[in-house]
Amino acid sequence: MAETMIPKATAKRLPLYYRYLTFLANAGTTKVSSTELAEAVKVDSATIRRDFSYFGALGKRGYGYDVMDLIKFFKKILNQDKLTSVGLVGVGNLGHALLNYNFRQTNNIRISAGFDVNPEIANTIQSGVPIYPMADMVTQLREQQIEIVILTVPTDAAQAITNDLVKAGIKGIMNFTPLRISVPSYVRVQNVDLATELQTLIYFLQHYGPTLNDA
Ligand code: ATP
View: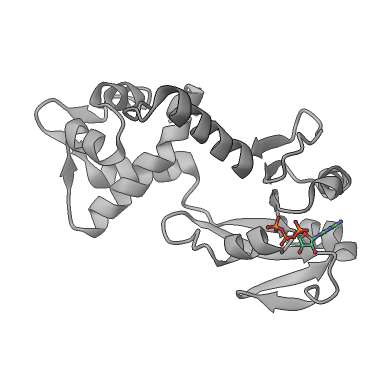
C-alpha cells in the first residue's frame, strides 16, 4: 500500500494498538472486535474504526478484525520489521533507566550506543550497551548508521550536543531536556519533558479533577 498521510492523532495511537494486538496474538487470540479493542486500549470504538478506516477496509461487520492481519499491517507502518538502533547521549540517572528499559519486548528498538562526557562511564559497558566518550560521538553515530538519538544530558549542554548530532546526520531526537532545542527543518524533535508533564497532570487534577480518558 502506498504510504498514505494519516492524522497525527491516529499515528500516535498506532503503537498502542500494535502493543495490544501483539499481546492478543501471544495469548492465541485470532479475532478482535473494535469494542474489545476499545476496552483494552481505552480509546472509544468509533475512533478505532475511524483510525482503522484510514488503512483501508480491514474489518468485517459482526466479525471483527483479524489479529494477525492487523499486526502484519501495523508492523509495516511502524517499521517493526526492521530493528531500529538508537543512540543515547547522557548516561545519568534517566539515561541508565532508559538503557535498562526493555524497548525490544514489544517494539523492535534497541539502544546500541551510549555517549557521556564522564570519564568514569565512557569506555565502559552499561546494561549491555557500550558507552563512548563524546569525542567519538559523531564518528560512532555515522559508522553505526544511527539516525535517532535520545538526549538525556543537562539542559545547558543540550544545544551544543544537538548541533553535533545534526552534523552526524541524525534525523530524529527524543529530547528529555526542558530546553526547546533548535534543529534544521529536516530533523524531527520529540520533546518529553517529564517535569512539565507532571505539572500539567497536577494542574488538571486541581482544576478539573479526574476525568475519563479520551483519546
Ligand atoms: P538525570 O536524571 O537528568 O540523568 P543526573 O543527575 O544523573 O540526572 P545530569 O547532571 O543531568 O545527571 O547529567 C546526565 C548525564 O549527562 C550524566 O551522566 C553526565 O555525565 C552527562 N553529561 C553532562 N554534560 C554532558 C555533556 N556536555 N556531554 C555529554 N554528556 C554530558
